[in-house]
Length: 395
Image 1: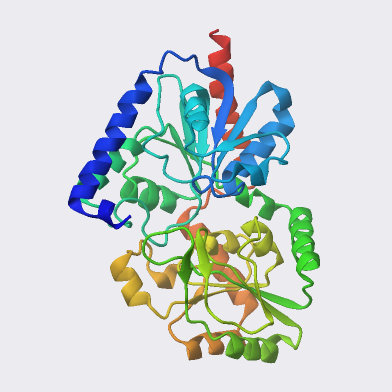
Image 2: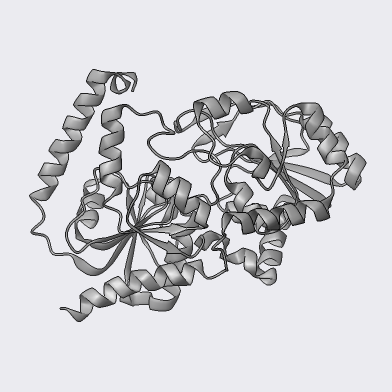
């Protein structure tokens, strides 16, 4: 609501949050269930990303030993997911599980309304690797009071996962101001990129479901400004010219998939040959199926670099984006080829050197100090189980 964007509105919002937090403390007499884990992905929007990888690993290996509870905005959509208990995000039931869970796992900043009791363990996987655009309170252009409040709450996180040395420095320490423990393991969602068999299965799954043949390009721009659910984005992109250049370079059998950032809707017009895959639940599967990624400032370029495939950066608003959002690593050090206008993009497609792109990706991962090794899920889950088993040993 616009009112809560004003100074008075922000003050009232902080007061409401403080009152709710005080009320929740009245329920601290409830015992913590040492086998209960509360998870969420993109604030209840999805069953996806790093928390899903960890959830599936824990369910497969520990089965009935653990209670895996997921918070969703629409829990009915996930009631058939095996091994989990879906509940409504921010409902009274969600607060009960938040008060009594031994472990929290999320891929975004934990909501300030979430209680954090002594003995509870919070693990944040985050949802992007590398260090490209700014993240956290500074990037969201919050008020000074809001930033202080968010920075203070960030310190309640017990463990962050990191994909690289550069991510730890820029995203965790500098942007988020987090000074706590970090597990240098990579991102669980990227483990599949270290298995040729899993890559092939994921690619075949997407291509069969969408009827894709030949060369596949995934166009996946990030959002602008603040994320507002249902916000319609209308990025300019030269679809018809890009298709023509792709066919000139790779032959007639070419497909473009377009994917909006989580929470957004792509409202741009595109030819029938372009397939909207914004509802596809697993971004990593789409990356496996793509021969080329075209994005702008999305951290998906980090994931795609692990595949060593060509990435083009369509950045026709670079100055404005850098001014409004902020850039960590200079664009010329990113693993993709920066294109500042339509003609540069089309030229880059026609002159694409796939070997040079693969080498550029490898050098970028090396320069960033990548921690990705295909074992992130196992390492992160081992830390969770170490906490749980330690608590159980004391009972």
